[in-house]
Amino acid sequence: MRMSEDCDKPRDHCGVFGIANHPNAADLTRLGLYALQHRGQESAGIFLLRESGCELHKGMGLVAEVFRKLPKEWWKTPQSMAIGHVRYSTAGSSSLVNAQPFAVEFGQWYLALAHNGNLANGGELREQLKRDGAILQGNTDTELILHIAARKHGMESEPWDALRDALKSVTGAYSIVALCEAGMVAARDPYGFRPLVIGKVGDSIVIASETSALDMVGAVYERDVEPGEFIVVDRAGKMHSSRIGDVERKAHCVFELVYFSRPDSRIFGECVYDVRKRFGAKLAEEAPVDADVCMPIPDGGTYAALGFAEASGIPFDMGIMRNHYVGRTFIQPNQEDRVAAVRVKLNAISEAIDGKRVCLIEDSIVRGNTSKIRVKTLRECGAKEVHMRVSCPPHISPCYYGIDFPDRNELIANNYSIDQIAEMINVDSLSYLSLEGMLSCVEHTKPQDYCHACFSGDYPVKDTAICKRDNAK
Image (cartoon, rainbow, N blue to C red; front, side, top):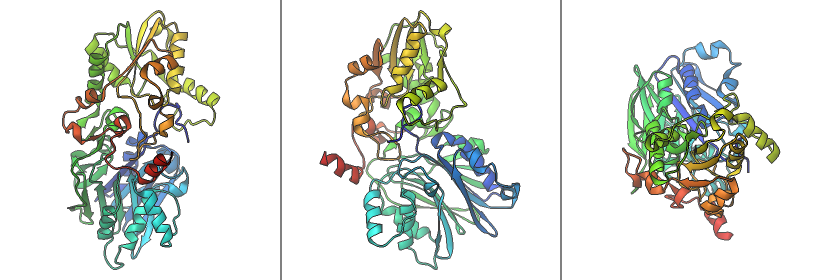
């Protein structure tokens, strides 16, 4: 199990971006990926369409690192469409062979796919493809989709019908963009687990995981790609929409609002900034505390802390500073080095803490390792009391839909009571936002249309391989 750099956060999943009908498609895709860098920092890639054909460049590292050495001609030579991807490995190992977009020869076409999410039946599909003689290069769900599509493809036709049919045979979470010489595709699973939005810049159509990427390239938000929708953008720039399928309930990932999406984005119809402030205000209502100062663990807890401070009347202060030059890829192999990594990333300001009763606002606690370190630091800085408030419910279950939550037995709230956790991390009190309170804070989507399986264990679609493993224990 690979740890995130602060030992106590889930790893992000992926971000996708696509643009059609623009002469600088590659450069705008690069800008869009910068805005999505928080969603994946292991690898990045761009697949683009020129008059002379298709080109792919991808590599390991941050967006700036992957594309730094490309010649200016690569960006300036006219092109018309491009898709891009940033990745964290929630399914498949961290290696160049699994970097996306994933591109294959597809009859007379050269087809590329970029995918955010995890397939719940990915394990079964992989075994079936192997039995049927498929030679798989990597171990990503993205490659599985392409293999299934290839088996359904008529070599003289455009690949979109085959890709649409392939998506009908998979279950789980996928928000994808795809590109070949015939045009660009955007598609989203019927549950709508992961966000995917449509914008326009001039006459060009932009697809992205979050609206912050639209803002980066000057695009205006038009609408979300609907759950179960399959959109083809042809070479003339026209959109054609069809359906992959429908389900009784939607299952938007509520943890996107808690942690993953940027606060300047709108997803699932919600302004992330506003929702996080409402989480904090609701938390202040549910779990009041006598404290002298309310401060966040940056950056995740900042907006919930603002809401908590406004609702409670406790003064807001930034008593912990984050080193923004330490990225999320600061991963260390042993506990001693991980503790050092936490200290490099976050440092407390003694003058803001000494002698005060501190209410510390955190967006989530997964393993509890670094919470203990942070509380220890506050006490070393002279905090009189430390109370922790968490702007989501306790994590009790892993995620199967594109978030790298650890195994169930690594989740601290699955193994210990809240009082026990408070004792373990050495806080004077600990409270989490209730599930009901969290869902009451969304305004534009029905609460029943959110997936909260990591908090409740209520899975809309169960990963079949993990089900077998869990039942065998």
